Image (cartoon, rainbow, N blue to C red; front, side, top):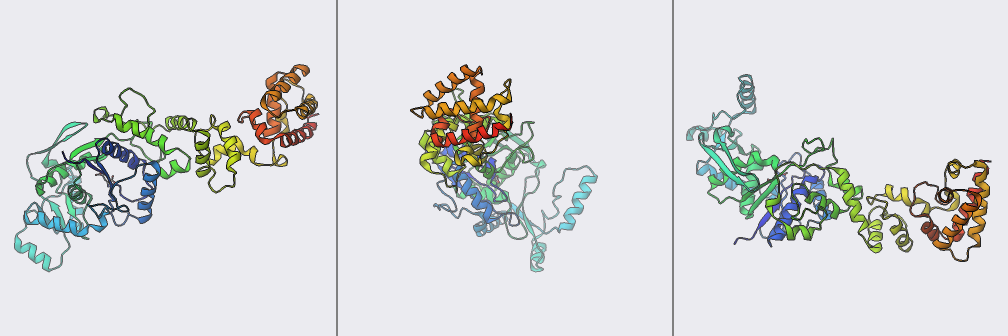
Length: 487
Ligand code: GLU
């Protein structure tokens, strides 16, 4: 049996797209499940829109997400070059082959003539299609045009009658009348190939066995099939994955959903969670579970469970999933991730973070500096920098004037504790609340504000243990002072 070889073939124009990770994931999983090879090919034939920065960002993002390719422009391989801009000669030679076999022809029509033709077709309500003027040029006419240096494109000679068909692994037989297909341009007048030519030539030369790509390309496939036939090449299997959709079911777009992989990285999503989320897009695990690792997906993978309906890319679902992944981390891993992501570049001691991280683990959904700070900034500032509205110190249904004395007593009880541990602290709070006729929850809240300045925090007593007795008492002192304002 042939070795499975699959490729992801992004065009380096703009930010790396989440769709590239989606298709890359299915490539990767399928390749791994069949001991095959996963290839990264850069389709940079659009010279005006392709940039090296974009190529770099695509590679970094795919690596970040955890999809390492076996062959590609940076890692090499036996089928290179893997960047289409470096394969121009190959495309020219293959165009020549098609010209010689009369499967393609040179078209000398000027852009003006083509615009006129299209305008006419529009007026006559005809489908836009090349009218074939240069299809049957005589050899002398071609020679003349060439010697006059007239620019030309090369077009594929699509059979005027008949059908072209292929089997999509997910959709089954797809058939279309050739008369609906335009004589596709293969080589542009600047000598660069179009997507169609480069894609087919490369898939063939790189011995791609399965072409996995998004559904939006399905309309190109009949042209590709005709190209394979024109070359006399064996065809790969075609697999068109359902298109990712916005919640309103339209095709995923940046107006409605962030589509850049860089955004997901910056927001602090875990790559494992993002992959797991994408794995649920269009595919389902055999036992219906939604949470699975990449290895589990590989072990369970089968095309039978890919559907045709466009999966909805629902970011709230991703948030939920990411939270699940965050909670599964050990304190060490959680700490390392925080240091690499949300806290990168900050001077946060690992030992201290190791104690704080588990306290916020239940409460964060992503590794963003924003979420981290909202939960734990109070750990990293001194008592005097803690700012909050003194009014927050007064619990509901208590006299504001009672707050300062209550805090004062609480401070004394804390000070008197032999051990600065959660249980004695909790006992002290409950006992005092009882004595002064407050609900325990009210006194907890009052202390929480005093110590953290916030209403929502990680577990209070554990936080106070980490802050230490001196620092906690200093914060109590400041709160007592602030509460005087409430008298
Ligand atoms: N360059 C195309 C893209 O940007 C590749 C499509 C395909 O896989 O054939 O997605």
